[in-house]
Amino acid sequence: MGRLVPKDNKWKTSTLGDIGFWAIGSGFPLLEQGSLTGNILFAKVSDMNNLGNEKFILETNNTITEETAKRLRVNVHPSGTVIFPKIGGAIATNKRRILVKPTVIDNNCLGITPNVGVSTEWIYLLLCGIDLSKYQAGTSVPALAQSVLQRIPVMLPEETEQHRIVAKVDELMALCDQLENQHTDAIAAHEKLVSYLLDTLTKSQDAADFNESWQRIAANFEMLFTTESSIDALKQTLLQLAVMGKLVPQDASDEPASELLKRIHVEKAKLVAEGKVKKSKQLAEICDDEKPFDLPIGWEWIRVSEVAKLITSGSRDWAQYLSDKGAKFITMGNLSRGSYELRLDNMRFVNPPNTGEGSRTKLEPFDLLISITGDVGNLGRIPENFGDAYINQHTCLLRFFTQCQNRYFPEILRSPMAKVQFNEPQRGVKNSFRLGDLENMVIPLPPLTAQVRIVAKIDELMTLCDTLKSRITAANQLQQKIADVMVEQAVA
Image 1 (cartoon, rainbow, N blue to C red):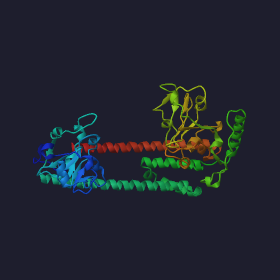
Image 2: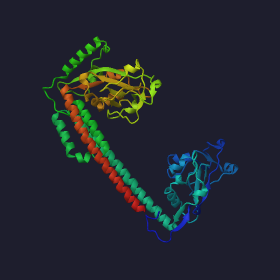
Image 3: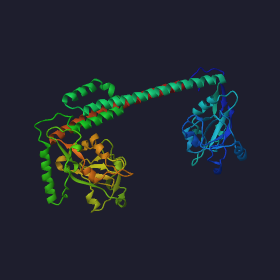
Image 4: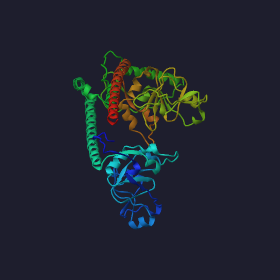
């Protein structure tokens, strides 16, 4: 206090208890509650949260008449009283409100009615600058005691000085609000511009159109990609370009994807004959409505089940096998949004049976895991040398044929195109994505050599994006640190 305007010897040292008198709360019998026809407001802590009561208590959920106030012998406090919570977790919210009408407060509230020569707005400002939770006592139910609060030291300027300080704070707060609104508007406009320009890449009709759109972005790259959200949008666009065949050049000498499919069909037939996999159901032909864009020559539209050796999920019976050690037990919490890296910071373990679930859902290297309830579409890919691991019923296991175990398919399934398909058929309160939905998902299949080029290019560009994002984060942290130091010096 006192740093916004010059401080002189007209300021006095005082205490919170000496600048006003306490506004004490009153009990409010349940039978008396619910009336809105009285001329006296009855304020509770919950009324501080009502729309319109952000600073002043304008309306309350209960009122009483003067006759009821006399009968209940409650304290009616005048306008200008500043109130705050005094019991429970609400203390830590540090809410302060000003009464503008004769009001009774309940016994979970406390307040200060200013003395003559003390401004209500000054007391409000003063209380907003004090963290009252530092003065609470009690563990199970914290509370504020008047005997403690009244000894809090404060500096009190003359009344004219109080008004000057309040006016200056109001002026600066209005300026802060204006700057915040301008900043919010600027961010929204920036995000809209980034989205529009990135969309021109994915919606380009030919190579010339694509190059023109990219040149427009490249010329303004430093201006466009200045926030973490803009980098995230760029990443999603790169993935979408990858699935559309626009991220790397096409090579006419690539063996077409149709040949890869033939080899997969041969491998599948062999495994079916050996009894190692079940014979696939007849798949519906992919219609034109399921093809959101045209593919390059040599690519094919396929359903996920055409390249999957196994699609299954865990069961509900794992609770009896949970243990402090043993095989890893992968749940939805270990999967990632926007990535397929497993999160291993909160790993659970099981000692599985030797049959049934112990064999059906045992994970292998390069298996792709997908969440199929709740937050559908989170991913996790099993690395080599991961050890024994299993899944629960909320997680789907997608195991690819040998020739499809590269990282092209995990990249495809974290793309915007895949997210649309994950979101479309979700059902029920908890959202559920059935195994049949995954089997029928439509994805592009490039030639095998093109898949390798696509993954390499994604790795290269994602690394650059992450580097740029880390620089933005570091710059923002530095700006915040400088701002904090300046504020500390200003109020020292």
